[in-house]
Image (tube, rainbow, N blue to C red):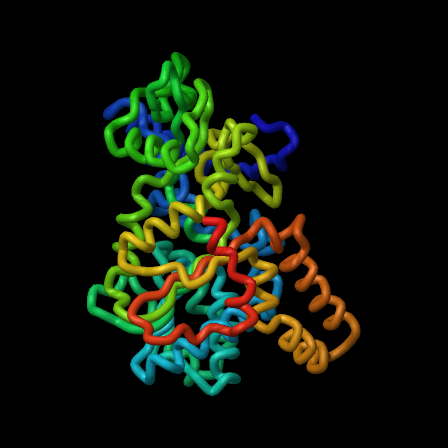
Length: 397
Protein backbone atom coordinates (compact mmCIF):
# COMPACT_ATOMS: atom_id res chain seq x y z
CA UNK A 1 0.00 0.00 0.00
CA UNK A 2 1.43 3.44 -0.91
CA UNK A 3 1.77 4.89 2.59
CA UNK A 4 1.96 8.55 1.56
CA UNK A 5 -1.53 8.57 0.05
CA UNK A 6 -4.61 9.98 1.82
CA UNK A 7 -6.59 7.41 3.75
CA UNK A 8 -9.89 6.47 2.06
CA UNK A 9 -13.14 6.90 3.93
CA UNK A 10 -15.09 3.87 5.11
CA UNK A 11 -17.54 4.29 2.22
CA UNK A 12 -14.72 4.53 -0.31
CA UNK A 13 -13.02 1.45 1.05
CA UNK A 14 -16.30 -0.47 0.97
CA UNK A 15 -16.79 0.61 -2.65
CA UNK A 16 -13.30 -0.57 -3.59
CA UNK A 17 -13.81 -3.84 -1.70
CA UNK A 18 -16.98 -4.45 -3.74
CA UNK A 19 -15.05 -4.13 -7.01
CA UNK A 20 -12.19 -6.16 -5.57
CA UNK A 21 -14.59 -8.99 -4.79
CA UNK A 22 -15.92 -8.86 -8.35
CA UNK A 23 -12.36 -9.05 -9.70
CA UNK A 24 -11.57 -12.00 -7.43
CA UNK A 25 -14.64 -13.85 -8.69
CA UNK A 26 -13.69 -13.17 -12.32
CA UNK A 27 -10.15 -14.47 -11.77
CA UNK A 28 -11.35 -17.50 -9.81
CA UNK A 29 -13.79 -18.39 -12.61
CA UNK A 30 -11.74 -17.59 -15.70
CA UNK A 31 -8.12 -17.44 -14.60
CA UNK A 32 -5.76 -14.45 -14.49
CA UNK A 33 -6.95 -11.30 -16.30
CA UNK A 34 -4.84 -9.56 -18.93
CA UNK A 35 -3.83 -6.25 -17.38
CA UNK A 36 -5.86 -4.44 -20.07
CA UNK A 37 -9.02 -6.23 -18.88
CA UNK A 38 -8.19 -5.45 -15.26
CA UNK A 39 -7.70 -1.76 -16.17
CA UNK A 40 -10.98 -1.75 -18.10
CA UNK A 41 -12.87 -3.14 -15.09
CA UNK A 42 -11.22 -0.70 -12.70
CA UNK A 43 -12.19 2.26 -14.87
CA UNK A 44 -15.50 1.26 -16.45
CA UNK A 45 -17.22 -1.57 -14.53
CA UNK A 46 -20.89 -0.48 -14.29
CA UNK A 47 -21.51 1.31 -11.01
CA UNK A 48 -18.10 0.35 -9.63
CA UNK A 49 -15.40 1.53 -12.04
CA UNK A 50 -13.61 4.81 -11.54
CA UNK A 51 -15.48 6.59 -14.34
CA UNK A 52 -18.77 4.77 -13.74
CA UNK A 53 -19.28 5.53 -10.05
CA UNK A 54 -20.52 8.75 -8.50
CA UNK A 55 -17.37 10.08 -6.89
CA UNK A 56 -15.99 13.46 -8.06
CA UNK A 57 -13.09 12.94 -10.48
CA UNK A 58 -12.14 16.34 -11.84
CA UNK A 59 -10.95 19.56 -10.23
CA UNK A 60 -9.78 20.41 -6.74
CA UNK A 61 -12.30 18.06 -5.11
CA UNK A 62 -11.33 15.12 -7.32
CA UNK A 63 -8.15 13.28 -8.19
CA UNK A 64 -6.65 15.40 -10.97
CA UNK A 65 -7.16 18.63 -12.91
CA UNK A 66 -7.54 18.68 -16.69
CA UNK A 67 -6.96 21.72 -18.91
CA UNK A 68 -10.69 22.59 -19.26
CA UNK A 69 -11.04 22.64 -15.45
CA UNK A 70 -8.51 25.49 -15.20
CA UNK A 71 -10.81 27.97 -16.93
CA UNK A 72 -12.01 29.00 -20.40
CA UNK A 73 -8.70 29.84 -22.10
CA UNK A 74 -7.98 26.28 -23.25
CA UNK A 75 -11.41 25.75 -24.82
CA UNK A 76 -11.39 29.16 -26.47
CA UNK A 77 -8.04 28.39 -28.12
CA UNK A 78 -9.25 24.99 -29.31
CA UNK A 79 -12.40 26.50 -30.81
CA UNK A 80 -10.44 29.34 -32.44
CA UNK A 81 -8.30 26.71 -34.19
CA UNK A 82 -11.21 24.48 -35.23
CA UNK A 83 -13.95 27.03 -36.02
CA UNK A 84 -12.76 27.77 -39.60
CA UNK A 85 -12.96 24.06 -40.47
CA UNK A 86 -16.42 23.75 -38.95
CA UNK A 87 -17.56 26.86 -40.84
CA UNK A 88 -16.17 25.51 -44.13
CA UNK A 89 -18.21 22.30 -43.74
CA UNK A 90 -21.52 24.14 -43.68
CA UNK A 91 -24.66 24.19 -41.56
CA UNK A 92 -24.87 20.39 -41.25
CA UNK A 93 -21.48 20.06 -39.54
CA UNK A 94 -21.39 18.61 -36.02
CA UNK A 95 -18.88 18.82 -33.18
CA UNK A 96 -18.23 15.58 -31.28
CA UNK A 97 -16.46 15.54 -27.92
CA UNK A 98 -15.23 12.18 -26.67
CA UNK A 99 -15.57 11.88 -22.90
CA UNK A 100 -17.11 15.13 -21.70
CA UNK A 101 -15.58 15.10 -18.19
CA UNK A 102 -17.32 17.60 -15.93
CA UNK A 103 -18.83 19.48 -18.89
CA UNK A 104 -16.40 22.39 -18.45
CA UNK A 105 -15.04 22.11 -21.99
CA UNK A 106 -18.49 21.88 -23.60
CA UNK A 107 -19.68 24.94 -21.68
CA UNK A 108 -16.73 27.11 -22.71
CA UNK A 109 -16.64 25.69 -26.25
CA UNK A 110 -20.29 26.44 -27.01
CA UNK A 111 -19.94 29.98 -25.71
CA UNK A 112 -16.81 30.43 -27.85
CA UNK A 113 -18.61 29.07 -30.91
CA UNK A 114 -21.45 31.53 -30.28
CA UNK A 115 -18.98 34.41 -30.01
CA UNK A 116 -17.36 33.37 -33.30
CA UNK A 117 -20.65 33.38 -35.18
CA UNK A 118 -20.32 29.70 -36.14
CA UNK A 119 -22.31 27.09 -34.26
CA UNK A 120 -22.28 23.34 -34.90
CA UNK A 121 -25.61 21.81 -35.92
CA UNK A 122 -25.25 19.57 -32.86
CA UNK A 123 -22.72 19.47 -30.06
CA UNK A 124 -22.39 15.73 -29.50
CA UNK A 125 -20.89 14.20 -26.35
CA UNK A 126 -19.95 10.53 -26.41
CA UNK A 127 -19.99 9.71 -22.71
CA UNK A 128 -20.06 6.09 -21.50
CA UNK A 129 -20.49 7.05 -17.84
CA UNK A 130 -24.11 7.60 -16.80
CA UNK A 131 -22.92 9.50 -13.72
CA UNK A 132 -20.74 11.90 -15.71
CA UNK A 133 -23.45 12.32 -18.33
CA UNK A 134 -25.91 13.49 -15.68
CA UNK A 135 -23.35 15.89 -14.21
CA UNK A 136 -22.70 17.31 -17.68
CA UNK A 137 -26.42 17.66 -18.36
CA UNK A 138 -27.00 19.55 -15.11
CA UNK A 139 -24.02 21.85 -15.62
CA UNK A 140 -24.86 22.81 -19.19
CA UNK A 141 -28.55 23.35 -18.43
CA UNK A 142 -27.60 25.72 -15.61
CA UNK A 143 -24.83 27.63 -17.39
CA UNK A 144 -25.80 27.94 -21.06
CA UNK A 145 -28.50 29.98 -22.78
CA UNK A 146 -31.39 27.72 -23.77
CA UNK A 147 -30.65 27.96 -27.50
CA UNK A 148 -27.07 26.76 -27.01
CA UNK A 149 -28.03 24.00 -24.61
CA UNK A 150 -30.61 22.77 -27.13
CA UNK A 151 -27.78 21.86 -29.52
CA UNK A 152 -26.24 19.35 -27.09
CA UNK A 153 -26.87 15.64 -27.68
CA UNK A 154 -25.45 12.71 -25.73
CA UNK A 155 -24.47 9.54 -27.54
CA UNK A 156 -24.23 5.96 -26.27
CA UNK A 157 -22.03 4.92 -29.19
CA UNK A 158 -20.14 6.60 -32.06
CA UNK A 159 -22.23 7.91 -34.95
CA UNK A 160 -23.16 5.12 -37.35
CA UNK A 161 -24.31 7.38 -40.19
CA UNK A 162 -21.81 9.37 -42.24
CA UNK A 163 -21.23 12.82 -40.79
CA UNK A 164 -19.10 15.92 -41.31
CA UNK A 165 -17.47 18.05 -38.67
CA UNK A 166 -14.88 17.95 -35.92
CA UNK A 167 -14.05 15.32 -33.30
CA UNK A 168 -12.21 16.43 -30.15
CA UNK A 169 -10.70 14.32 -27.39
CA UNK A 170 -8.76 15.70 -24.42
CA UNK A 171 -7.09 13.13 -22.14
CA UNK A 172 -9.05 10.23 -23.58
CA UNK A 173 -6.47 7.91 -25.13
CA UNK A 174 -4.42 7.77 -21.92
CA UNK A 175 -7.46 6.09 -20.30
CA UNK A 176 -7.84 3.36 -22.94
CA UNK A 177 -7.13 -0.03 -21.32
CA UNK A 178 -3.42 -0.57 -21.89
CA UNK A 179 -1.66 -3.86 -22.55
CA UNK A 180 1.49 -4.32 -20.49
CA UNK A 181 4.28 -6.40 -22.03
CA UNK A 182 7.77 -7.57 -21.18
CA UNK A 183 10.54 -9.63 -22.79
CA UNK A 184 11.98 -12.94 -21.61
CA UNK A 185 14.55 -14.96 -23.51
CA UNK A 186 13.73 -13.04 -26.65
CA UNK A 187 10.00 -13.80 -26.41
CA UNK A 188 7.15 -11.36 -25.75
CA UNK A 189 5.13 -11.86 -22.57
CA UNK A 190 1.94 -10.09 -21.50
CA UNK A 191 1.25 -8.93 -17.96
CA UNK A 192 -1.78 -10.41 -16.20
CA UNK A 193 -3.46 -9.86 -12.83
CA UNK A 194 -3.84 -13.01 -10.72
CA UNK A 195 -4.51 -13.98 -7.08
CA UNK A 196 -1.88 -15.06 -4.63
CA UNK A 197 -2.42 -17.81 -2.04
CA UNK A 198 -4.24 -15.40 0.27
CA UNK A 199 -6.59 -13.96 -2.36
CA UNK A 200 -4.64 -10.75 -2.91
CA UNK A 201 -4.12 -9.29 -6.37
CA UNK A 202 -0.73 -9.86 -7.92
CA UNK A 203 0.85 -9.34 -11.34
CA UNK A 204 2.19 -12.24 -13.38
CA UNK A 205 3.50 -12.67 -16.93
CA UNK A 206 2.25 -15.10 -19.57
CA UNK A 207 3.32 -15.68 -23.19
CA UNK A 208 1.71 -13.04 -25.40
CA UNK A 209 -0.79 -13.91 -28.10
CA UNK A 210 -0.18 -13.14 -31.78
CA UNK A 211 -1.84 -9.70 -31.66
CA UNK A 212 0.23 -8.42 -28.75
CA UNK A 213 3.42 -10.10 -29.94
CA UNK A 214 3.00 -8.67 -33.43
CA UNK A 215 2.39 -5.16 -32.08
CA UNK A 216 5.55 -5.31 -29.95
CA UNK A 217 7.64 -6.61 -32.86
CA UNK A 218 6.30 -3.78 -35.05
CA UNK A 219 7.54 -1.24 -32.50
CA UNK A 220 10.95 -2.91 -32.38
CA UNK A 221 11.25 -2.77 -36.17
CA UNK A 222 10.18 0.87 -36.22
CA UNK A 223 12.66 2.06 -33.58
CA UNK A 224 15.41 -0.15 -34.98
CA UNK A 225 16.16 -1.93 -31.69
CA UNK A 226 15.04 -5.05 -29.89
CA UNK A 227 13.79 -4.60 -26.33
CA UNK A 228 16.21 -6.10 -23.79
CA UNK A 229 15.17 -8.87 -21.40
CA UNK A 230 13.09 -7.49 -18.56
CA UNK A 231 12.05 -4.32 -20.38
CA UNK A 232 8.41 -3.58 -19.52
CA UNK A 233 6.04 -1.06 -21.03
CA UNK A 234 2.59 -0.45 -22.48
CA UNK A 235 1.12 -0.80 -25.94
CA UNK A 236 -2.35 -0.36 -27.46
CA UNK A 237 -2.76 -3.09 -30.10
CA UNK A 238 -6.47 -2.19 -30.27
CA UNK A 239 -5.83 1.47 -31.19
CA UNK A 240 -6.43 1.11 -34.99
CA UNK A 241 -9.75 -0.64 -34.30
CA UNK A 242 -10.72 1.98 -31.73
CA UNK A 243 -10.04 4.86 -34.14
CA UNK A 244 -12.05 3.13 -36.84
CA UNK A 245 -14.90 2.60 -34.36
CA UNK A 246 -15.08 6.20 -33.12
CA UNK A 247 -14.28 8.02 -36.38
CA UNK A 248 -14.97 5.62 -39.24
CA UNK A 249 -18.16 7.50 -40.17
CA UNK A 250 -16.47 10.95 -40.17
CA UNK A 251 -16.27 11.42 -43.94
CA UNK A 252 -15.03 15.03 -43.93
CA UNK A 253 -13.45 16.98 -41.11
CA UNK A 254 -10.80 17.07 -38.44
CA UNK A 255 -9.94 15.10 -35.33
CA UNK A 256 -7.98 16.80 -32.55
CA UNK A 257 -6.39 14.69 -29.81
CA UNK A 258 -4.62 16.34 -26.88
CA UNK A 259 -2.96 14.12 -24.31
CA UNK A 260 0.28 13.52 -22.46
CA UNK A 261 2.74 11.35 -24.30
CA UNK A 262 5.67 11.07 -26.68
CA UNK A 263 6.69 10.12 -30.17
CA UNK A 264 7.54 6.43 -30.29
CA UNK A 265 11.33 6.66 -30.03
CA UNK A 266 10.91 8.77 -26.86
CA UNK A 267 8.11 6.62 -25.43
CA UNK A 268 10.29 3.49 -25.53
CA UNK A 269 13.55 4.97 -24.27
CA UNK A 270 15.92 2.41 -22.68
CA UNK A 271 15.69 4.15 -19.29
CA UNK A 272 11.88 4.06 -19.34
CA UNK A 273 12.03 0.33 -18.65
CA UNK A 274 8.90 0.06 -16.49
CA UNK A 275 6.62 1.94 -18.86
CA UNK A 276 4.48 4.97 -18.12
CA UNK A 277 1.56 3.48 -16.18
CA UNK A 278 0.38 5.71 -13.33
CA UNK A 279 -2.43 5.76 -10.80
CA UNK A 280 -3.98 9.03 -9.57
CA UNK A 281 -5.72 9.34 -6.23
CA UNK A 282 -6.73 12.67 -4.70
CA UNK A 283 -4.06 14.63 -6.58
CA UNK A 284 -1.36 12.10 -5.67
CA UNK A 285 0.31 10.07 -8.41
CA UNK A 286 1.63 6.60 -7.57
CA UNK A 287 2.66 3.45 -9.42
CA UNK A 288 0.60 0.70 -7.76
CA UNK A 289 -2.40 -0.05 -10.03
CA UNK A 290 -3.58 -2.81 -7.67
CA UNK A 291 -4.16 -0.39 -4.77
CA UNK A 292 -7.82 0.45 -4.06
CA UNK A 293 -9.28 -0.65 -7.41
CA UNK A 294 -12.10 1.61 -8.51
CA UNK A 295 -10.85 4.63 -6.55
CA UNK A 296 -7.82 5.40 -8.71
CA UNK A 297 -7.63 6.79 -12.21
CA UNK A 298 -5.28 4.47 -14.14
CA UNK A 299 -3.50 5.99 -17.13
CA UNK A 300 -0.62 5.39 -19.51
CA UNK A 301 1.09 7.96 -21.74
CA UNK A 302 0.24 8.04 -25.43
CA UNK A 303 2.52 6.80 -28.22
CA UNK A 304 1.67 9.53 -30.74
CA UNK A 305 3.41 7.64 -33.52
CA UNK A 306 0.95 4.81 -32.92
CA UNK A 307 -1.91 7.32 -32.99
CA UNK A 308 -0.70 8.64 -36.35
CA UNK A 309 -0.47 5.08 -37.71
CA UNK A 310 -3.97 4.29 -36.46
CA UNK A 311 -5.31 7.46 -38.05
CA UNK A 312 -3.62 6.61 -41.34
CA UNK A 313 -5.10 3.11 -41.30
CA UNK A 314 -8.57 4.64 -40.88
CA UNK A 315 -8.08 6.95 -43.86
CA UNK A 316 -6.92 10.12 -42.08
CA UNK A 317 -3.71 12.05 -42.62
CA UNK A 318 -1.73 13.90 -39.97
CA UNK A 319 -2.41 17.61 -40.45
CA UNK A 320 -0.23 18.77 -37.54
CA UNK A 321 1.56 17.48 -34.47
CA UNK A 322 3.08 19.76 -31.84
CA UNK A 323 3.42 20.32 -28.08
CA UNK A 324 0.40 21.83 -26.34
CA UNK A 325 2.21 25.12 -25.69
CA UNK A 326 2.95 25.57 -29.39
CA UNK A 327 -0.57 24.55 -30.31
CA UNK A 328 -2.10 27.14 -27.97
CA UNK A 329 0.22 29.89 -29.22
CA UNK A 330 -0.68 29.01 -32.81
CA UNK A 331 -4.36 28.92 -31.85
CA UNK A 332 -4.30 32.56 -30.72
CA UNK A 333 -3.65 32.31 -26.98
CA UNK A 334 -2.09 35.77 -26.73
CA UNK A 335 -5.08 37.60 -28.22
CA UNK A 336 -7.57 35.45 -26.32
CA UNK A 337 -5.73 36.04 -23.04
CA UNK A 338 -5.63 39.81 -23.61
CA UNK A 339 -9.35 39.87 -24.39
CA UNK A 340 -10.18 37.87 -21.25
CA UNK A 341 -7.91 40.10 -19.16
CA UNK A 342 -9.73 43.19 -20.42
CA UNK A 343 -13.06 41.60 -19.46
CA UNK A 344 -11.90 40.46 -16.01
CA UNK A 345 -13.90 41.87 -13.11
CA UNK A 346 -11.00 42.48 -10.73
CA UNK A 347 -7.35 41.84 -10.00
CA UNK A 348 -8.10 38.41 -8.55
CA UNK A 349 -9.76 37.34 -11.82
CA UNK A 350 -6.75 38.62 -13.78
CA UNK A 351 -4.44 36.67 -11.49
CA UNK A 352 -6.44 33.46 -12.10
CA UNK A 353 -6.11 33.98 -15.86
CA UNK A 354 -2.34 34.35 -15.50
CA UNK A 355 -2.20 31.13 -13.48
CA UNK A 356 -4.19 29.35 -16.21
CA UNK A 357 -1.60 30.39 -18.78
CA UNK A 358 1.29 29.20 -16.62
CA UNK A 359 -0.23 25.75 -16.07
CA UNK A 360 -1.16 25.35 -19.73
CA UNK A 361 2.17 26.59 -21.10
CA UNK A 362 5.10 25.91 -18.76
CA UNK A 363 7.27 22.98 -19.92
CA UNK A 364 7.23 21.25 -16.53
CA UNK A 365 3.43 21.45 -16.31
CA UNK A 366 1.21 20.95 -19.39
CA UNK A 367 3.10 22.88 -22.04
CA UNK A 368 5.56 20.20 -23.10
CA UNK A 369 4.16 17.10 -21.37
CA UNK A 370 0.97 17.36 -23.42
CA UNK A 371 0.94 17.01 -27.20
CA UNK A 372 -1.67 17.90 -29.82
CA UNK A 373 -2.36 15.91 -32.98
CA UNK A 374 -4.71 16.97 -35.77
CA UNK A 375 -5.90 14.34 -38.25
CA UNK A 376 -7.84 15.27 -41.39
CA UNK A 377 -9.99 13.50 -43.98
CA UNK A 378 -12.12 14.65 -46.90
CA UNK A 379 -11.06 18.32 -46.79
CA UNK A 380 -10.09 20.19 -49.94
CA UNK A 381 -8.29 22.85 -47.90
CA UNK A 382 -6.89 22.76 -44.36
CA UNK A 383 -8.46 25.81 -42.73
CA UNK A 384 -6.04 25.92 -39.79
CA UNK A 385 -4.27 29.02 -38.41
CA UNK A 386 -1.02 29.72 -40.28
CA UNK A 387 0.85 30.17 -36.98
CA UNK A 388 -0.24 26.70 -35.89
CA UNK A 389 0.84 25.07 -39.15
CA UNK A 390 4.20 26.86 -39.00
CA UNK A 391 4.89 25.19 -35.63
CA UNK A 392 4.09 21.67 -36.91
CA UNK A 393 6.57 19.02 -35.73
CA UNK A 394 5.07 16.11 -37.65
CA UNK A 395 8.50 15.20 -38.94
CA UNK A 396 9.35 13.92 -35.45
CA UNK A 397 6.75 11.15 -35.71
